[in-house]
Length: 317
Ligand SMILES: [Zn+2]
Image 1 (cartoon, rainbow, N blue to C red):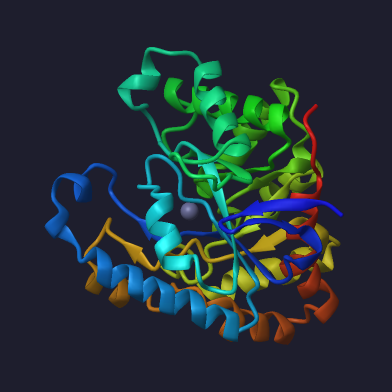
Image 2 (tube, helix red, strand yellow):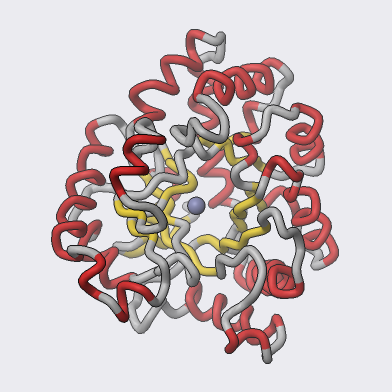
């Protein structure tokens, strides 16, 4: 039986169940809370996160993939305090999140140095713990494949081939960044069927989305609740159409939400994107998909079977 590493150690992939494939518990401006700890009430936010994760088990979620890596304020000890006792599989990631430049350390070193650190997170543990990453994360946004971003994409591809851990990405869907990611992964010999091109759900461009899937990748319809980019109604309509076209086997669902997110003042986030929380898919999106003609079988594929397939394609190559 294939297994996958989680915050609490390995579990059988058959037990993953309903999986949110792209979320965060804490997203912090790296360097700010470490230097200015009064910017937040860490203990209160850990308690709030624990409550929000517990609520998820009541709406049927069994696995939560936290794609928080370097650049988003990853802290495994803090995550363990928040999620360690919650009856939820929490899958954690390694990789690096940047839209353009790299931390100075990596600027002067090549992609293989970075890949080696990612491999260590997957095989030995993260930040001195025994918690192992089970997925690799990288990002390409509006600036495109800058020198720094290219180094991350290649390092992620190499760490993937050495470990077999799947790749999940951030893209700027409006500028079709997923295509460039696939091109670089392909150059690095990556099987594109082991890659999730993230934030694809921000786009309604069926030609773009089908082109990504025709090359074999999964696409992340993973920003439910970010209504300022695209409304839930439009996101649902896009998925329903792609299901009709036969693509239910290549889409995964999520919110890209966080329990605590410091990029904007919390009141501003609540006011602009009130549906951006971990329960939106269970409470509103699944009923809307059913009304749009998506079958229970297709919903099960997107929420259970596809995530499991992403994690069951294992082994280095
Ligand atoms: Zn994210």
